[in-house]
Image (cartoon, rainbow, N blue to C red; front, side):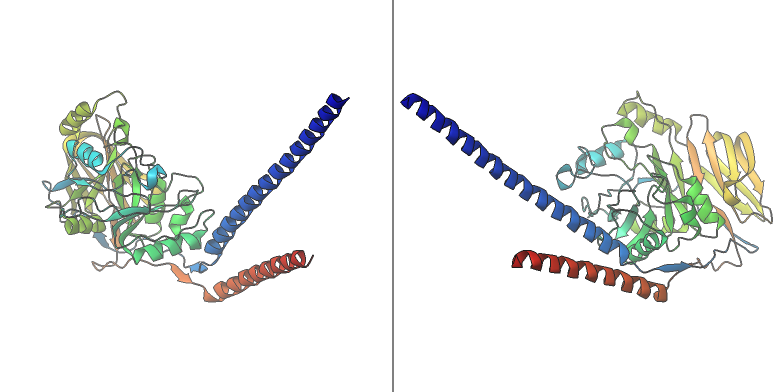
Length: 425
């Protein structure tokens, strides 16, 4: 009898204990879920606030290149002054949170130097890397952007890092506003890998976006000639830059695939920047071989890499020559249309027609290397004025901001009243 009573008591106590534990666990889980919910809501509110309080821009219609003066960005080119450069590469930062794999500063410099690169730029995410900053060729740079649609900007010659970005959707006003703000803090604010994500920089965006000098047409992940031709066809004098966008220098396919040859006498920061701004540079798409070693790629670059020896205008005739015979050259104009194509030669020429607003060239070589040249463009005279299409529509901006503030205040008041009722209960 006593044994049965004790057994019943133990069962009762265990049952009550289990119930208490279950209630306590449920309480803890609810607190965690509540905290998580508040964190998510706070994040959403921050995203919304940073996204909506952007000036609303109006855009004028673009004007294509017009005039009798043909501008040649290579008019001061010296065929012996080519500097092999890459500006877009990442090292491991923020404890590996950003994608730099195992790259260290020393590894990156060592691999690129072995591959014949004279300028080795580091552009970590939202952070200026000052490694080797005493070098005369050092140019502070970083990749700006947190957004899920990879609407990033490569900032070369940066004075400081701009922390603000838009995490989700970006409309044309947001993209323009970012370029405008970055241009005040960096020498070159460059739309990076425009075609990387479909909802990133849209091809049609390039019709209206302005206030930038270069576009990353060649990137290790994408080639964005459609974006470039749209900008050029609408009268935006934008030159190209090519970069690996390297994240892992131990992967032979991640280095020396797409880069820039800059026509500068010395590997010195100001000379490099001026040549890039003036369009005196060439983009390189060097073919990938997946099974080669670093030593084999070094030798292939030494033996196969061609360079431009002539880009000359004689009246309205464009002459282009290279250090090696090219298998094909394409002359490209308005809307990316192929104007002429020539094969198997060392020198090619094209007579620029009155309807050609711009002409650029792509040279493909027998080993698969392709060189991308900056465009010859039409202007009224030698004084080139770059068009700006954007202007803040203050009337629309003030109305929208007023609506946003009203909605936010209504939500705050409602939440405050709800909290007050719970406290009174």
